Structures are given as C-alpha cells and as structure tokens.
Length: 219
Image (cartoon, rainbow, N blue to C red; front, side, top):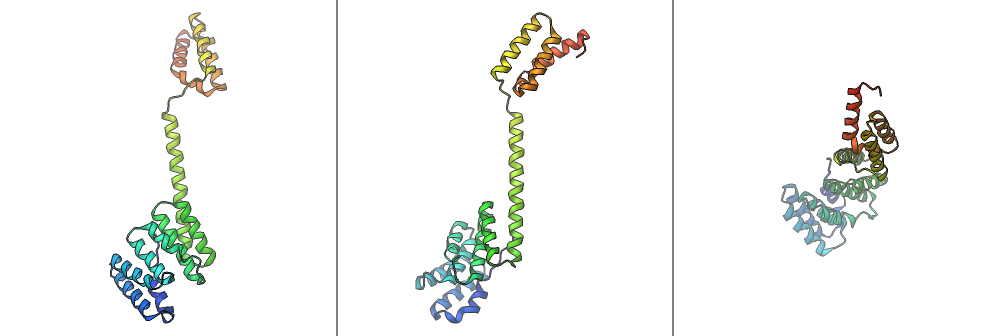
C-alpha cells in the first residue's frame, strides 16, 4: 500500500507565511514524526492547532500522525477539514490519505471514492492511480469470495420441498404401491424439471430407479 508523507516538504515550501510559534511547533512535530515518535508528534501538532485551529498544515500533519498510530477514524476527521483547501495540491493529498485510511479499515468503496476525488484534483498522481486500481481489485476479489461462500452455503442448506413437490411424491408413492415403478420414476423426473425443490426427494427417486434397473426396465 503506497502512502506518501509530504508534510515536511509543505512546511519548507510555505513556512515563511506561518507565524514563528506555529512554524516551530510544526517543525518539532515533524522531527518527532521522522523519529517514529508519533504520539509526541501529535502533541506538537495539536499544540500548533491551539494557536491556529484552522491551520491546514498542522491539520494535515495531525492526520498523518493519527494514521501512523492506526487511529484511522481520527486521521480521516483531520484530513476532512482540509479537503476544501484553496491549495488544490494539498486537498488532493488529503483525499489520497483519506483513501488510504479507509483502505486500512477495509472500507473499500469509501476508499475508491476518495482516490477518485484525489485524481480529479491531480490527474497525474501515479500513487492515487495505483491505489485506486488496488482497491478496485480487492473489492472485486471480496465480492467473488462472498459469492462463492453464498453458493457453498446454498449447496449445504437442505432443499425444502414445495407443496407441489410433496403432492408429487405422494402420487409417486401411490404408483410404487401399485408396483408401477417406471411411471413413478418418470413422474418424479418430470416434476424435477418443473420444480427444483423436488430434489429434496433425491433419495426416494434413486430408490425407485434402482428398482427399475433391477427389473430391467429401460428409462
């Protein structure tokens, strides 16, 4: 799964526009983040957000820290606050990371939608294209597995005969009592073509056929 950390690059690019106090806190957070100290980094970003609750860089970095801590819901909440940014590049990256966070939670449909939005803003994002196809492939695989499991369950589930099937069996039993085995067998087989639930009496049908075979009748 591809995932890009671009927070330091963003800070270096537009850090001049930030107040020194906020820039310093974000820089500290980035340093801790690079060391794998995500909880401490998160605290630094949150400290920066106390000074400026709408600071997009701090929010993005906060989302990154939550993501690394596997707190994907919190990460998404942070990224969602900046997807409407005037900085379309930042907005695209936020959507991309939202897609990753959903993917990690196995919420593939939501993940796909996020990647598509990222690509609408940045059609040249190769990572978003890659992850979009990955999510689509996994969703397709899951759907196929669910279908296979459902088919397997249907096979294992006993067939419940319909009222038609029950009446048909009663008629066939009457023919058997009259030693009309061939007629009974044909009755059941014709009924099976009309109503699949007649298969509930496969054992009965097989026994009739065995008798017919023994008697040398041709079916």
